[in-house]
Amino acid sequence: MGMKKENLVRTLEQQLKMVAAQRLAARREPSLLAARSALKRYQSQRLGQTHADLLANPNTAGAARFFLEELYGDNDLSQRDVDLERIIPTLQKMLSYQTLHTITEAIVLDALSERLDTAMARVLGEQFSEAMYVQAYRSATTRAERTRQLDLVQELGDSLCQLVNIPLLALTLSIMKGPARLAGLGRLHEFLHEGFTTFKRMSKPQQFVATIVGRERQVMERIFAGRQEPFDVI
Image 1 (cartoon, rainbow, N blue to C red):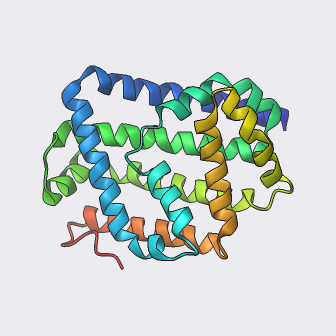
Image 2 (cartoon, one colour; image 1 turned 90 degrees about the vertical axis):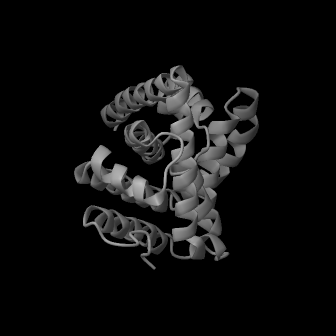
């Protein structure tokens, strides 16, 4: 298990550097930064519309917000990633393999999403229509990349479903809240705590993950197939 944790740590460090490089490059190009921000806002609004029923359902609302804001949204996650990189050795000692694996999966997904967003933003600029977005999705990214992105969403969702079954994890996260804030790691703790608690509250978390991923796979297939109304999947 120790070796497995070391492999996770190497992956985590590598992916965090990739994400940081993407964000730094964008900050150095004001036009790219503006285009990426516009793209992220557009995608966040689209996801909110596609999954409006999950956001409105009391059973799934919390998990839907977590998924759409933390994993797909337009929030600035830079502080979370800085926190992570700073305390990787501590995480390796303190966290279970499954918890560390979940964090790593989230960052791997983030790194890929940032790269795909940058590729599309360079094509789209700051102002674009739905038709332009769909065209850029097909021309600036590939089916293989988008399939990989959704596979990672599925894997991360499955990991969160497994986390809720780990004994005493809820207590551990509660105990860590104060020390995490004192250490300047409040943003990272919020990410972990929200992901765990929102999934813990759901009656059928696996069904929730399958619903989101299933719809997004339909969207991807409709876009690459050139279908009309590609986001109309409900």
